[in-house]
Length: 200
Image 1 (tube, helix red, strand yellow):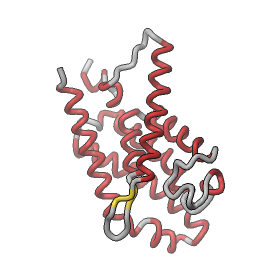
Image 2 (cartoon, helix red, strand yellow):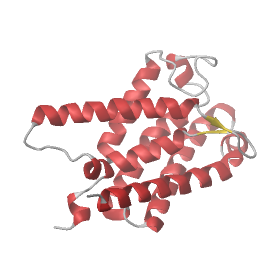
Image 3 (cartoon, helix red, strand yellow):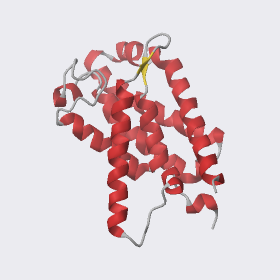
């Protein structure tokens, strides 16, 4: 059996699951989901100066989590993050200043939040199919996951302000930021895989 087949996800390579210890396996998943949700929260609060508009690192965190955890655990992590936001915790970008809870989630950014779930699933599904060891395929999978998030966000925003306006305000300003975060995610994942495969 090949190394890639044995190590389906990056997190399996870094922290292998123990199939003989069910309790430890569950604890591992809980810790990963909790840690991933913290990573998402921190990424939402980071604003990086960029042209033409500042960017957060949230979509970067979403696709990295999906690609690192696999689609099931990645989706579970994003859903846990969304549950925290729905409960009123200020985990989203712009919270609590722009509102909290469900009122925030059904606003203009609601489609992007839903897109986080889809983006994590796409990233995890693609990288689980042995795309994770090629820089070209990693970049392509991160790009597809990013496009999935933007498509969900634009579809929702379009129902609120019209699709032309949604494209102008929700997609066009983020071309360069999306390209940057796509390449950054692929490079980080490739570097982490290299370390995991060559340690010890």
